[in-house]
Length: 444
Image (cartoon, rainbow, N blue to C red; front, side):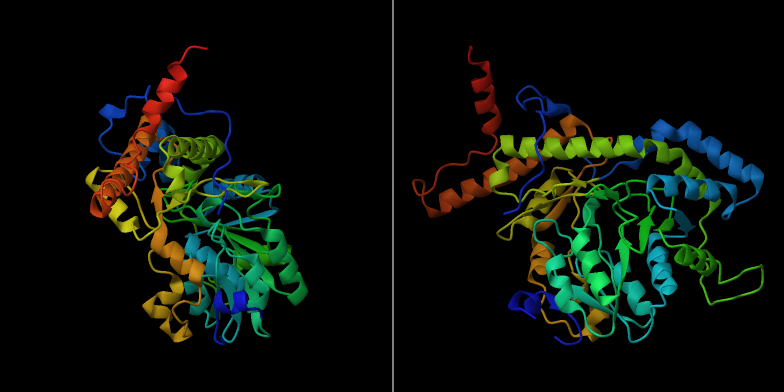
């Protein structure tokens, strides 16, 4: 095990490229008048609902009239549509994204004494499901550019009792899966995709949901395809796993009242399926809108000179990034102060995730030492997510960036004053747009 692996994994033993630029998508901020914008939410689900309200109401009404509230024809239709969407032969709906992870592990017979390799920089459910079965999560550090599991560190974390690798496609971008698959093949391990934030994402032309043995999706309302409550889905290319997943989600019962295995109760409600059936045809359009917002942010941050002080998101080549979150790095310990400033200006933001899993109290029994996952810990200190929901307006993005620029301008001005008026150049944030305007207005 090399030194890098030793310091970047946790078990019982021991300058990123920014968003790809496309053609100019942002009207210069001097021509935009965001003065009427006074607040921007992190997400506004009412805007999406308003567009689809009549169809959703009709769909829910049909379920109510049918009296079939659990699984049933609406769930069958959703499973068929999502199998086509993910290019998977099998799609199995369940009650939540968290249950999807638990069911995947159960179907693979992960149990006490087994180890599962996964990132610490992820939502709690990823590791919690492993522990619920008596198995042990082995945390591996992330790639600082993508925030995803670093494939270069995974091989060193494999032990004789490792049974599976669980890469998380964080924030809407797939993990680089080919090296993960090669490691899994070499050691005869299962690969479980946690694709809760990445429906429609792709790696090298292959869609999330078909990049491992089984994949887990969430339909929590804030996801790219969100329902009106909890909901989840599993996809798999394997016939044996599909049959076992369908059995386990209904208490291991087949036929009724005859139990072939000890499963769980994790059936998708028909009303959730009906809502998702209305929304699914719009998913690619919403994804395109998220991608547009990401490129606009990139151009606005560059125009205001903020690309020099923020770490902007990195999009790997040969991927389809679906931008569940737009996460920037704020260095030098200024992240929390920026969030406080944004809150005062009524700009929504969130930290995903302020406390890595290996530092959570409930995982203290794993004996992970502080500093064992340095990139994970740095990301937890520096990152903040900005609004990027599909219906976000251009003027709202300008307002967000202007408020961030104002924060750094004030910070730089204060620093200049503290060390002497002639020691540092004066703040230049907020001046970029007017300079650009002058250049564009020059004849010729």
